[in-house]
Amino acid sequence: MALLRAEGAQAIQTNKEYRATRSIPIDLCSSAFICGYRFLPLYASLCLRAFMVQSRGLPWDKGWAGIDLGARGSDLSLMQKRIFLAGAAGAVGRRLCLLLAQEGWQVTGMTRSPEKAAVLRDIGVTPVIVDVYDEAKLRHAVADSAPDIVIHQLTDLPPGLDPARMAEGVVRNTHVRELGTRHLIAAAIGAGARRIVAQSIAFAYAPGAMPYREDWPLDPGASGVISLERQVLEAPLEGVVLRYGKFYGPGTGFDRPAKDGAVHVDAAADAARRAVTRGRGIYNVAEEDGAVSSEKALMELGWRPEFRIG
Image (cartoon, rainbow, N blue to C red; front, side):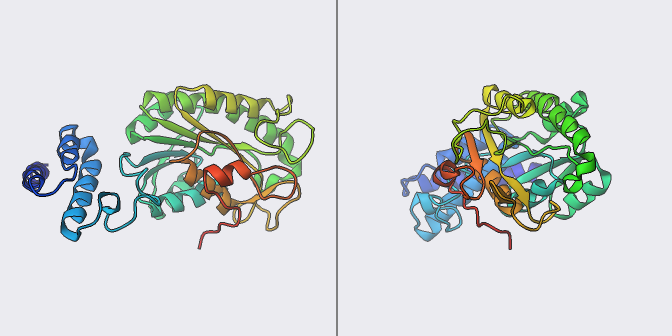
């Protein structure tokens, strides 16, 4: 820690010397350092950016290691880059972990399974074994991770949507959407998170003219979905709801897209990755087949249904 302090002081002094000859906002580095060691990643990133500007003669908006920040990095450069992902070991969660880790996010992944925790650790995620219904333990786990963003990918359905087990699965899943969401949002607020991104579904619309858009009412019988979305959008957080189509791809039990609004798990994960730093409100996330319209996600999130990992 003493070494960090010494290096920080030396970097600030060096930056002050640059100030006389370079018209760039070096003071941002000093300010970030003063804010405390929690913001050391931010301090380091700003100093790196200033160094690239000075040493390579790059314009300020292209100072992140030579990468054009206007394309992707500018909205990340001022964030803590910490995410708490509930449901990290699920079909979408695992794919999302890969994408977030590739972008440099520090991901804490929540699961109920010790075996799945080991899998998360292997892909660069810090696992925590917590049940969403254990409110005290959940609050503690989220607070410890100090996230800027919380992602809700929790479900409780049988593998492959086994018809013999779906009746009880629907009851459990509704409970997750109602009470589990309440606990997770409370934990996010208590930990000082700024934003929440939550999984919903695009096949709970009330009957009407297709394709369904986000402003079409939901079926009154979809009480769990309605509760989840209302809680997310009414919380004192930046709320994003992703209404996913019917999943297919690795880990889903389905190799081919279903009719009436399908989405590959890789594309679903990519929508959540994009929603971490973009958009607000509700988005349909499904392939265009006449059932639902995903035009809003395409326009505002830059999402593409053909996205695949690898």
